[in-house]
Image (tube, rainbow, N blue to C red; front, side):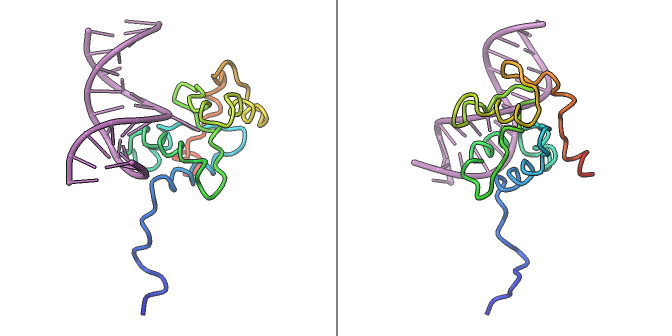
Length: 118
DNA sequence: ATGTTGACTGCGT
DNA sequence: AACGCAGCCAACA
């Protein structure tokens, strides 16, 4: 027989955690790889978060990957979208102003889970 | 098990 | 101030 609720459930993949946090980002706001990495424990490099985002399109649920930019507010991941402009268009559709691959109001739009979910 | 890769970041030159 | 190098963690072959 086996316990209905195993105490040691499947170890949640880091990817899954990242995707979950990204889904919490409200429309019209953005977050960064480093911020998310820090929220998940800071021991994981921001780079790993970026790697997780690359797998975002394979996630079971929708992940608003366009709301994640790098620490400078650059759309570093735009080339990973269906089209090179998809990321910018998705952001503008949420009311986020986007310059050439950059968010002018980035510092005002930054959504930090460690702060917002506190 | 080891080596390579990647949507990043911080520090040094 | 701009550019380059190295560190970092997890997934894949």
